[in-house]
Amino acid sequence: MKTNASRYVLLAFACFIAFILYFVVKVQIDSKYDHELMLEDYYRQEKKINKQFEEESAVSASEEPIFRQTNVSLEIDFQAKSENISGTASFLRPSSKKADFTIPIQLKAGESLVIPRGKLQTGLWYITLEWQQNGKQLRIKKELYLN
Image (cartoon, rainbow, N blue to C red):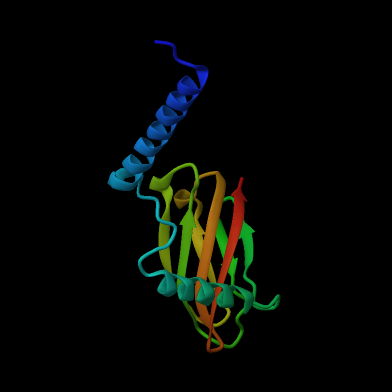
């Protein structure tokens, strides 16, 4: 019995399609390949991100905290002359999750937040400050390299 080349091409094509379909079905059935882009609470997360963006854009140049490094401490001056400030300061160290910490901010007018250098290792820190000043909720993110 004589077979022509078109049958082999057709057989190879059918095997290729079966191979592709096997992986498509495997990815659809197996839960470890579940890579949904949408979150269950997508709209709630979006509102949270929008709120954070509004808080960051509300910080004017006169309200932006001033960071000062000394040999013994890191001082954060909020430049608030008339009001008490309350909020949180988060310090994230990209190279060591164990060094991350968050501290509350409770300052009277004219006071600065002082963090002892013993708590802060030398290197890069991502600092997020969230505070309330003049009736506004404010937020700022800062990258700081400590010497």
